[in-house]
Amino acid sequence: MGNPTLNGDGIQDNMAINYVGPFVFTKTLLRILKESSLSDGADVRIVNVGSGGYSDISSRQLDYGSISGWNKNFRWSMLSTLRRYQYSKVAIHLWTNYLSQQMTNEDPRILVLLVHPGAILSDGAKRSLLTLPFPQFWLWVMGLWMYPQSQGAHTSVFAASAPRDNVHIFPGAYICPPNVAQTQKAFVLDPQRQKELVDFTERLLTSWGV
Ligand SMILES: NC(=O)c1ccc[n+]([C@@H]2O[C@H](COP(=O)([O-])OP(=O)(O)OC[C@H]3O[C@@H](n4cnc5c(N)ncnc54)[C@H](OP(=O)(O)O)[C@@H]3O)[C@@H](O)[C@H]2O)c1
Image 1 (cartoon, rainbow, N blue to C red):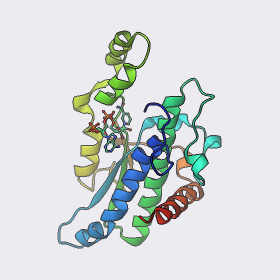
Image 2 (image 1 turned 90 degrees about the vertical axis):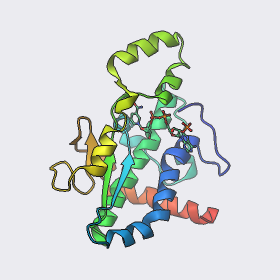
Image 3 (image 1 turned 180 degrees about the vertical axis):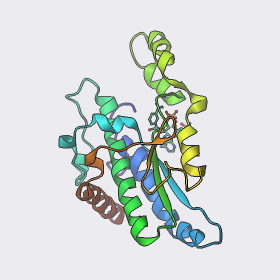
Image 4 (image 1 turned 120 degrees about the vertical axis):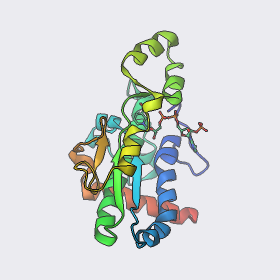
């Protein structure tokens, strides 16, 4: 979260950290993951951290086919900081759903899953609350309904380690507290929107020499 700042490549921090970073990390490891999946008894999974907040973005606001689209600043919104964060999380959902389909076609041994940790009063969430007027009040109020940081990894650990025959573990499953697969909104399941994002990401990475 935070103010809209651009990184050295001209990409807004939210998109760079929440989306491009995991994208490049996964792309870099994919060959090794594919090789590992051939080993006896291997259970290779990619677990991406999305957010239930993705659903607050309207499908009409999506534009992932240009840098200006990626850097949408939501200045008109009362919650522009939150919206920029959620917009980067939509990107994670779109790409993870794309990747899941890609693995189903190319290498179905690799299981791709997406998680929402729940509302977690993490250090980062606390830092954001401390920027508000009356920060101690907000910390107290949010502490009443948000989960403690110690529970922040529950859905990730479940997605990474629950047996494959668990009813909530399947390609592209979106795991939310209390470790149940939920259906995502239609706009992040749209293959054309996914492709627009992934194609533009690949073009950008090529232009950066990555
Ligand atoms: N908290 C929630 O309610 C909530 C809800 C839905 C989804 N999520 C998702 O859960 C994940 C964790 O969130 P959180 O609330 O635990 O956030 P957090 O407390 O702010 O932790 C974020 C982590 O990311 C690291 N990080 C930040 N910028 C980085 C960068 N440029 N390069 C490398 N690492 C960087 C931080 O490292 P340092 O500690 O070194 O700064 C920190 O370990 C995020 O993907 C978030 O979107 C959280």
